[in-house]
Image 1 (spheres, rainbow, N blue to C red):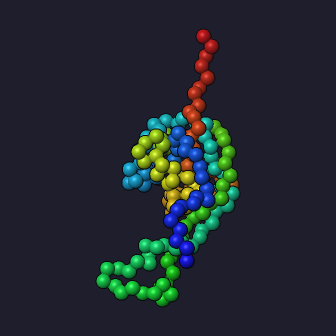
Image 2 (cartoon, rainbow, N blue to C red):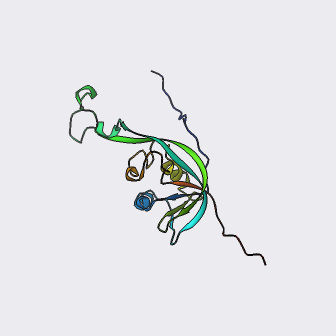
Image 3 (tube, helix red, strand yellow):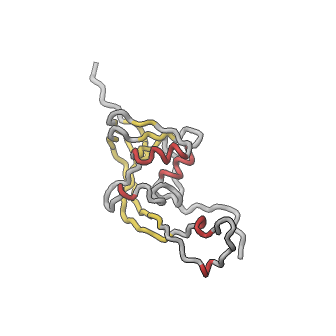
Length: 162
């Protein structure tokens, strides 16, 4: 059996300046040490959004579920019941748009110490992110936009001619 000691990604994304995320992720982000601001009022942004093409619940080979409890003897995998955890996998297509984030939306800048972790957790295609771990399941629907958006820039209101 070959020893694979390098990680080869199947999907790569660029790091946006920030993400817009639903407020249900506030405690999860805080628990991971990711800084964010809560928008006090609606605000328009130029974003890259993801349209959900397909959603699938897939079996999760939960490695933590296979570790014996302290004091228990090791049981062969063939004798153990399979783990019961599932993961949500989404297939998406990107689209650039103007999006007005409602008050209470989380603005998560990526120029921070945990910025790379924020990208990893917030991208819908991540193999170990919030979408995959089913923290957003109640907000996902086929044909709709994914609830996390990649900020391209803030949309400034037009100025009056002087």
